[in-house]
Image 1 (tube, helix red, strand yellow):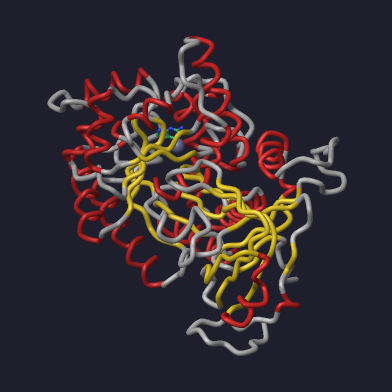
Image 2: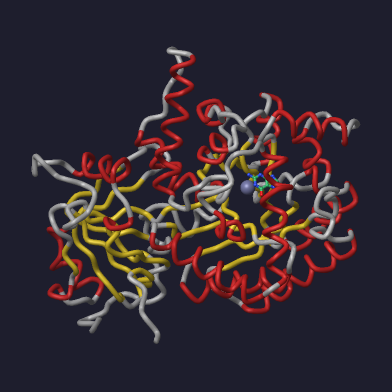
Length: 454
Ligand code: GUN
Ligand code: ZN
């Protein structure tokens, strides 16, 4: 945008006017009507002001009032959604193979497929599809599991960077696999390749893509490997992701395998893997003591309700996690969860909360407003990325979805035409799909619609 009389230090690249809805720590859905939001040339939110003040703001920030992008009556901006747990490598069979419980499912479907990522062309094809699909569905930040293969995991980082998605990418570590022995590493390989993965990834200096230390789960890792990975994370101040207490059978086996530890959580804790940059998927069967340890360490839970129901793993009591003041985000857990869409994660979170209410009518059901927060700000907090994303605040990156609830041919019929913004948000969360997501922005850059390069 051409500047007029820029009196401030930053240059404004874009200004949008209309309705913005987001979450704060105090309000699950804050509605900002007729606001003007300016994005600077670095992709950060420079200011949020009243639409009425367009003339004074244009003077102050040096943009032309005529160049402001005006949203329509049935449009709004919301923060991009944060998928706190997704297996990019399992996208190839998403929507199938949901007929076995977790441990048999891993041995029968997951490990044989993940072994194929030795082939970089296979990896490139699936990873390109999953990054495009999740962006299209409004996932501006994704926390990915790849596979044990370092080069394919680096390729996932490159593809996320190329399409402009914010991502944490983990090369999976596992030195124990008795059922599919061709899909495992030696402890030394896992350790050395994790170091190589991290140093190669950091060398790229991607602005939005970071490595995450990724022990698959306690049943796939020796104590020695868990210890090495804890050290690597600590020495490099890195994020950590894994799985915990997804099924009762898994919890029982961890107890047998690690008899000297107080709990499943204690196994990770004693290996320096429970930090304020740790996100653990599932946690359906965590005890109050374990949640207390999560809270003490600042570790977070990724709630993956589609997966938990699809694999008959359990139902996370999200209210209990919130009452413990443990950070909580939502995850699709593709392909244990069959949908790559965070809108599905929102709906399944509400379903699970209602199923718990059917079992106990006194249960405090989550509201759609609370679940909206989990999908956006909550997820960014769970990944310790809330300094950069998750809500509309000056200084944060502009990670946003331009939602059009009235798109022609879309899934929402607006019958009354007098719907207020909160109703439009509720309809989008419950009925909407990618057709309603007109544009996706990450760090100020429009990444959807895709720019065709051929
Ligand atoms: N636990 C260990 N690995 C996995 C996985 O790939 N998916 C799920 N849902 N749980 C796991
Ligand atoms: Zn998972």
